[in-house]
Amino acid sequence: MSWTAKNSAAAEIDRREKPYLTQAMRDTLTRELLPRYETMMACTLPALHMVQHAYGWVPPQAMTEIAQFLKLKPAEVLDTASFYEEYALTPQGRHRIAICRSVACEFCGHEKVTQAVKDALGIDVGETTDDGAFTLIELECLGSCGTAPAMLVDETLHENVRPERVARILDDARGDWTEPPAPAGGHPSPG
Picture 1: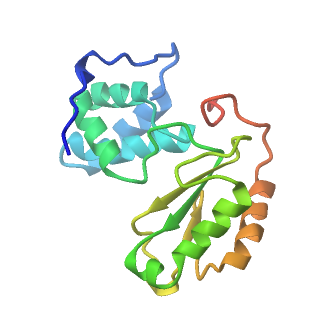
Picture 2 (picture 1 turned 60 degrees about the vertical axis):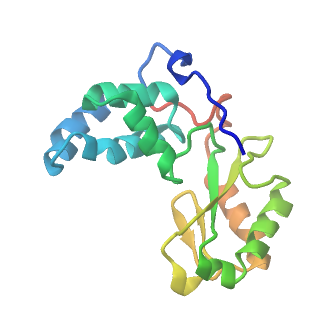
């Protein structure tokens, strides 16, 4: 296997006029979060969470804005965001389906749950449905080993999931969505 180098320093970032890291987010970070952390870098995770919760993913522009705000190098924010599986670095569906693939979930049949989701949605792991409703991912651990297999739909944990329950879980998630479909690129923009 060989390593392929790419000129990341010359990469162009698509930018929009309106910042992703809004003034309200900056105010919350300054007032509520930064005082709780010893260093600015330690606030990287909460800042990434704020952006992801607002937009459904963390766009490259947002990472540069976080870096500037926290006085970090953009590469430090990208390294953090790309290290943790919970951060989406590409646009996601309105609902994010995460199947746990830890040892406990593997032992209890997570593969059958994943297959049931793939069959129900017609997508593979890492893909989004054509209507933008669902993105399917697998995560290393959801911290629910005692109730494996586990599945996370947005922020709702489903435990002891059996393949025959998957269709109902997905229907419930579809029913929770009351806004019109998002524009291309993910979730609707907040405020």
